[in-house]
Amino acid sequence: MKTKRTFYLVLIVAGALIAGMGDHIMQREYALSIGIVLLMFGLYKTTQLWSIDQNGDGEKDKEKN
Image (tube, rainbow, N blue to C red; front, side, top):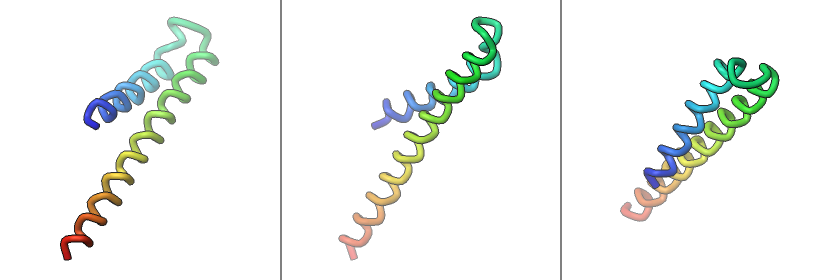
């Protein structure tokens, strides 16, 4: 599970870097498009992991009581 979080963090950072400084490597429009897609995908998957963690912990607490 920890590798998923690390991978999604890398996606977020890479997306931000490509969106911010990618115009030196490729055309600005492509850099922004690819950077935003990577950034949003990383954020989306990270929030899914957070919701799974929150739901999983709540069910365990209910079972204990």
